[in-house]
Amino acid sequence: MRLRGFKLLAYFFVILIISLGITNTLIFYEIKRLTEETLYEQAYAHYMAYLLSNRSYRGDKNFNISETQPEKSLSYVFKDPSHPDKYVYVNVKLTYAEKFFQEPLKRILLSEFVAVFLVFFVYQLVVEDFINKMKQQEEWVKSLVASIAHKFGNFLSVQKLNLALLKTRIRDQDILSRLERSLSKVEKDMNLILNVLREEKHMRREWIRADSLILKTLEYLKEEASEKKVILKLSEAYIYADETDLGDIFYNIISNGLRYSKSFFHIRLCKGQKSVSFIFRNDISNWEARGMGIGIILLERVVRRQRGTLSIRIKKHYTVLLKLRGR
Image (cartoon, rainbow, N blue to C red; front, side, top):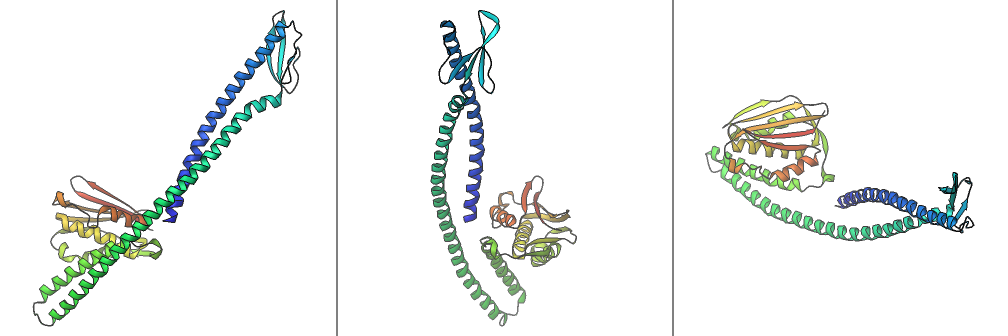
């Protein structure tokens, strides 16, 4: 959560620096233009005073009038009307010209500094308050889910115990096996939600053989897979990820792909140089119920946590494109 606050502050700082850079560049050239126009008008006024005084006026402390051009000086050149081949030079004192240009620029920069400081101060207060509220809300959601999961886990434990007692008294093991698989799948679906709330520091990334994990998931879902035509195009591939997250991703996509398919489910694995792509495709049977189990948003969160991407394409078929880091 704190890292998220630093990222927001960094983004805001970069945007602010770029905006102020562009604004200051425009202001710089505008002040420069206005300074040059104002100095020229003042120099022209001194030039006219020089002509009206019959060449006796020689300027003041900031402007000096001469018939020869001095070195290292800002000068404005005007023609002498009585001598067309001669010029009158109105020389501006460099310190005056620099002060004339720098003073408004310094005031603007000082005002910007104060404004930026106030904006950062207010922004920090607002963002900190917003992040603290988000953190409290997230902790509350985690506590609520954990509490529900704990109570539901106790319920499942009791049902498993009851199931074990039934196995000793009922001869029809087929019914009990189906009931046991149903309880196991419900437990796995609940674990999916809990695993989404895991913090990244609790994960352990390692190289996992993806094709074997897919086959293991299909074996776990063999009852659903037996009713559909499952097409597999797999090859040996390794994914650098957390095994629990990767299992959740495959289970969620495959279980929903089988559940909502009409007749077939196609899984294809494609290896790249530094990534492995998976294509899951089916002919969805119920367009009104084409959900993703725990939801596409939660699934995308798990995929992003494993440095992967997930996209869905719905045309003639329902296609899920998954890309993860591989070797």
